[in-house]
Image 1 (tube, helix red, strand yellow):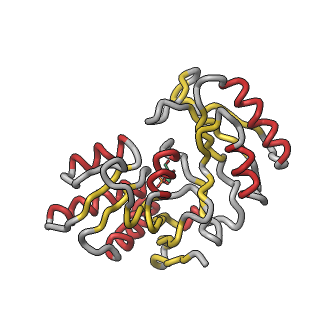
Image 2: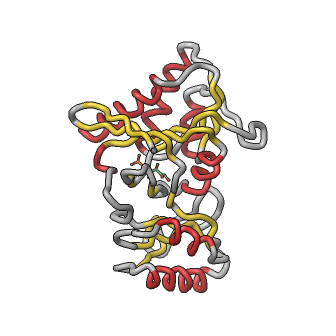
Length: 232
Ligand SMILES: O=C(CO)[C@H](O)[C@H](O)COP(=O)(O)O
């Protein structure tokens, strides 16, 4: 499929920039999966690195490829994290979390000196909000948390509502951390910093999928080649 080909090109470009000996964060999702696959081949050829995965799925893939793994108890900082994104704006602010790994992804990205995003060009947007914003919430008090998120949505002029993510009707999606995810349809997010603060002020919100000023560089694959985007 064309988009899989583009994702792999972006992943290959990111891998080509990495020096041996780095402490790497490994993202989650189909694009990150290409990166881990390519990294596995490089490790098999002797490439030295130590990696912290952002999800159980990525950990399992990395283990199957004999990629050396660690965690953020053993390593307190990482050099680089390579991850995908659901939306990328011109300042390289992101929406992440379609794959349900946003909490670990944000912890790993925050512990990294540099966050690099890999994506195909369908992820580029002028303003964040085309994609529903994933919000990770505690199971306890779900109704009250939903109500509080709905009030924030009204304050931010949201268009269409929210829904609890499910794996099947009536079966909530559960994150690796044991939390639930609410997908909130904001439409155009004109004040992402204020929205981030308002959501984090809600007691039942564990984290949300706005990654603001975290990404330093993005490799975005287009049919004409991979573009390198850098944050100001
Ligand atoms: O945030 C994520 C997972 O929580 C992913 O990085 C994001 O959803 C992009 O995934 P894909 O590469 O499959 O499009």
